[in-house]
Length: 416
Image: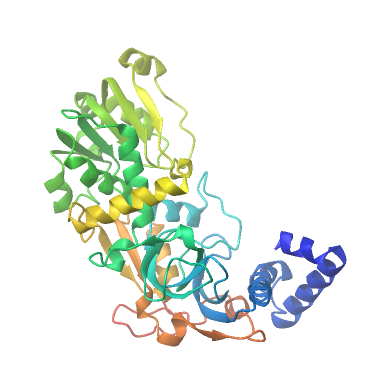
């Protein structure tokens, strides 16, 4: 919005700010204007972009966190695609429990700017394209974008999905890229042993990715909550720290250890698992500061630490890894069915995130099923004068009451 206002000029920008401030006070007089303005800006920017492109607008639904500990399902306008862009109607978006729980709770290294739009991995069908796009309406694609029924993206940033791959599984594309690039940076050689610390979504993807390469794979978890039959089938050994204590980690001596815990004590635990000349691959985003590391032990064992964050990848590398991920799904070398422990209606998002925030939750992978929205809820035409959806700000809670487990709506305010 800032660059847009700069283009308009300081005089025009002042008029726009005053207009939006006036609208905020008139539309939602009971709310602080500062809380309303971000939604009005987003509404205005969509219209300015549509005017610049001489294209229309469509309205869908998005998940937004207006402040810590709250989530709303709100209607959101998107301009039809310009040159080199595609508009995707989303079938499914994947919740990455560790990352999204951290942002929901504002944990260290996960403090967002509000309003915050969570999510970063989804799949759906192209419904409109701009001039010069290599895609066509009806194409099945996956991309990195927040949880919403509609996603507008640059043509180069969407990945074609093979016809044999279900869209629900293709929606894991960003998680698949994260796991595959971590495995690639580990450079696992024949005969080497692997340990995966942490059995969240990334950890369980890494287990499956490494099982066919390593001589043995050990899964390490703090508790038994996420240890499924699939984990026991894939891993040669399963260690539960709460049962055997951390001393058992000293007996492992792995060639490669993946830290997928996202916890500050992950690196010290990984060091205990790793043998002489081994590698530790940091596959998770740590929520906090690791304060105690035995660097003497690290030096004695000649252990190498490898950073493996997805931000280090180029677009070409991401495309290559996305293709490899889809190939593994086609060949059934990855089993995602066992990783999907929840399918959530988008209108139940806040209820689900509140449950996820609990320390005892056992969710591995969750999918927001956007196909469960009504046809007009997921996408419909909007106009310049279609007002913004500010109803949650007026009432302080979801306008559309969440759904119960059997698909009927709860009475407003009575959701669990």
